[in-house]
Amino acid sequence: MSDPRRHGPASLALAILFACACVPLPALALTQPEIVIDAGDAAAAEEILIEETPRPTDGAPGELIIEDATPAGRDETLVIEADTGPRTESTTDSRQFEIRIDDVRAEYGYLTRSGAPADNTLYGKISAFANWQPHPAWELQLAARADAHDQDGDNSFSALKADYGDSFVRYRADNLTLTLGTQTIVWGRMDELPLSDRVSTADLTRFILDDLEDRRRANPALRAEAFMGSGKLDLVWLFDFRPAELPDRDSIWYPIDRDSGRILGFDPQDLPPALVQGARISEDGPSGDGGFGARYTRSHSLADFGVTVANTRQSTPYFRAAGAGRIEAVYPRSWAYGADAAIDAGGATWRLEVLYSSDNPVTRTDQRYTTTPAIAWGGGVEFHPGDGDTRVNLQLMGMNLVDAPSVIDREDVYSLNGEVEVPFDRNRWRAKLGFYAGLGEHDVYLNPEIAFLGWEPHELYLAVHYFDGDDNTFGGFYEHNSSINLGWRAKF
Image (cartoon, rainbow, N blue to C red; front, top):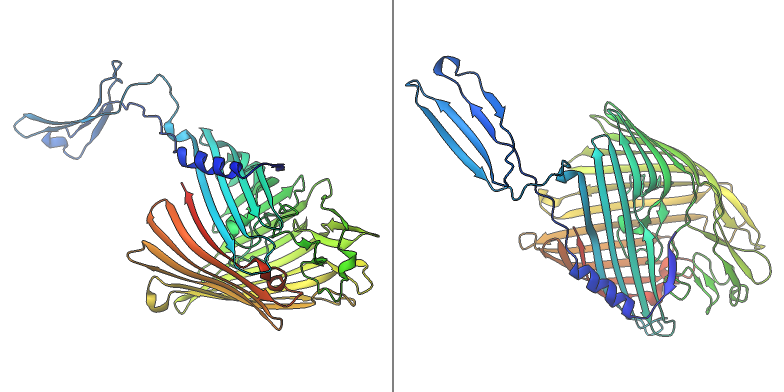
């Protein structure tokens, strides 16, 4: 679990400078033996003999020697010298060990609303790993990351947090892969909002500003993947529950606004601000395991489909009233049964997903906490207009509580979301628009972005994040957090 420590703004600059100064480590170069390819004589022209000569011991370049015996008996030899560098006594293949920085990011955000809780934000991230494969069947990896946050304005704070990444021991057999350690596992079919995502740990430190892969953290798990023809059975046991990574309590993305007395997802008219203002907040997650899940996926000529069964704790907390002046985060266990499919038809990819969950947290109108079943569903289409480079992804999604008592939570949620992506100038630039629109309730999120991609693997981008909506929606709760963001990111 990450251990937050407070620092000054210099911590962010230090993280960025360190990222800029680092480059991937070069691979070890090992000299190769001479290879002799002898075509033999004319009578044995169909035979090719490959002989391995002893490795040079003086550090000289290796040679590739191709000999051809002509009908006249005169040998013609082509010698290609390969400069393989100095010889090393190590017998380890250079491809079996790798250590490098794989993800770096720096971003500045300017909040545009006059009533914003902050003036600007800074964010930096760096992650690295070391991977060793001592044997084709075995793999060991250690990974770590550091995130720096700085916020200036009425609610100022600075924090530098270190965390583990995907760190595991993995064994591979012919049709079986076993992985023990911290892992990032995301299930589901829908883009960015997969409904069957029941075994991952959410990263809420920047809410929805990042892509799905950057909104998940590694969590302790034992995973078994069995491959059966065109199908795969995925079994996961979360042997140590890890709750979601939450923002700092002074962050503009924290789900409780103690100044105004609001909690994300509730209308202030239903949850009096006086109950929230000044309340003591407990974020502690329960100890013990986080549950287990099983997912079967199969590729068929008609469609790709999946089935999910899980009994897990959702990592995202639900905040409930826990007595006078106290708010407590709860993570109830829930059974989940899901099915999904992807079909290629009519020049487009069609996605469908539905999930039933048994115990979803809600708050009754008398402020008492309980759980109720729910059904979440979604359908989407992804296509390239005119078979060009432009990509369009549209999704219609919903969530309906089943036989719920009288509650202050939203019982039915419907939304349209998606993304339009347009590369241009020989793919050196990309224009993108991500969006989310509530149906029935006013709830809007818009994310236009333009990025320069011509400096691979680096990417420079300018993005806008716009929020607006009713008080009981996330667009309304975060409407003062609309911002313009300028950033740099690189994945190596």
